[in-house]
Image 1 (spheres, rainbow, N blue to C red):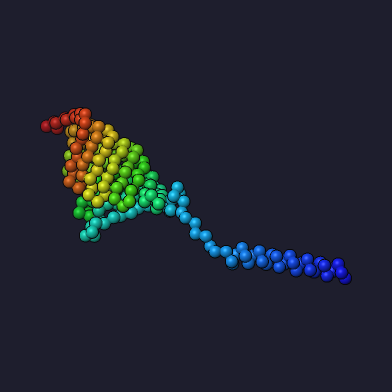
Image 2 (image 1 turned 60 degrees about the vertical axis):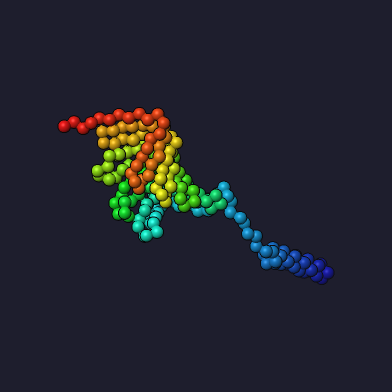
Length: 188
């Protein structure tokens, strides 16, 4: 009988300790707020297409990418295989810009790297294709610049320079430093 009472007492002590442990562990402790890891993206997405409009509601550009990662702490979005389409008056596609990788800094500056290809999509354009390894583009003003060698191919024209700058809206481009050109007039 004494042994039975001792067993019941030990069972009650074990149940009491387990109950106290569970209540203390789950109800009395405050929840900890974990800060996001700055080295990991806040979100990722696959096969993304985003269209941006100006203040007047006119389509400005469309950005497509196979994979994106957004880092909130540093306010950057990384794009794999991005393609940027710019529009004339929100309707007609003007330019198609593609690269291997791009970083959107804030909501304004897009830095494209790795086999940057710029195609002029307007039918009567004199400049057809621009190639470089790095391009920085201000998405608001549509100004762009590159500090890497840039090749421009156009109608009867090939030209190369060490750097370039221009504006997609005005269709002006300027090659800077060690510019070499080859012009072949159209034969009649």
